[in-house]
Length: 203
Image (cartoon, rainbow, N blue to C red; front, side, top):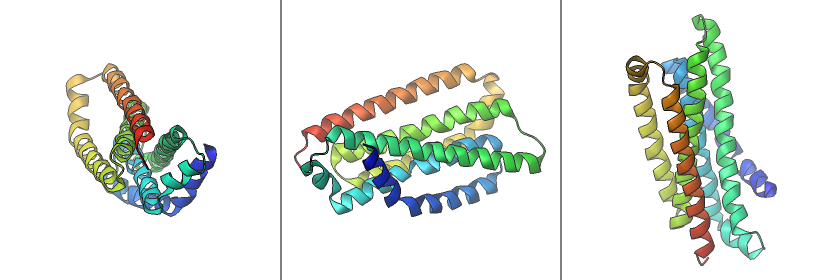
């Protein structure tokens, strides 16, 4: 399976650079420490859509399966790619937070921890839904549309609700725990749906 992951990372290496530049520009405009940890992983989670698009264009799934690669491993490799991309986005968020925190006069570590969890969970949900749509429908374009829609909804919701939630709820750590559990449930269901549909599909 690691060979599949390496293949995907190589295919989308230039997309990582482009997405990194876009994330830096977007975050630099808002310059909000909390949002850095959410927006960067969410941006990078869309990279799994690029990986699926390349495979779809090259009919990679048909070639891989006919070569003896297990369909379950193909699905798992996509989830690994999504998790890797999300983690890279989180690391970029950390770097930007440190840079802006120094220049802006301080870092709120409580907010940082909450946003790390939120950003990673939302990024994994985006990955899971994108992958599930692809393997259920067999169409990478639909998966990318879903990824874009969920990403934009997540960003708009986070930007508008970040200040309101902290003011109304005060301590939102219990809420973050519930959100994390719900997101993990979505990821698990997305994985199971992807494997089930892909194994049943006639290539």
